[in-house]
Length: 167
Image (cartoon, rainbow, N blue to C red; front, side):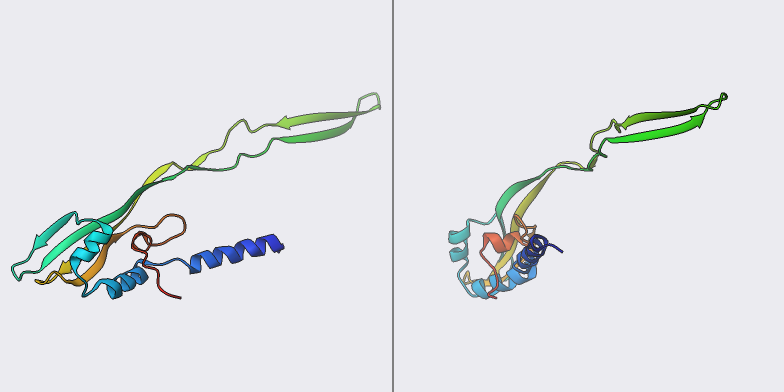
């Protein structure tokens, strides 16, 4: 195993170790926001997209942020390289002479790369459901829809709300 390969593998493991999952992000978000005024959250991250008042006086808000579209290019197989085959045949003629014939056969597969997966557009976002009591303090906050983040991140909510657990 080459040194360069070892460093590449080590870097990949370190990057994955630094990824925050939705569950980890949710724990950070809850510890930071439960008991805080709902207006403080909306001032920092923007208004909710909807709200639903309950008979008890509590309100359930849906908040969404961090919307971004990621382009994933298509992937292709690598075409077979052109090959050259050299064939040498030796045969005897009816008169007893030996004839040696060398032929060069170039094989070009004649096809280009084959698409394995087509290009895609992926929507990235964080959606939260937040319940506030009569005093407008946050009672519960949970990720109702959390896509992958950009790059290697596993949680868009962790990125948007800076909710990475302390290591």
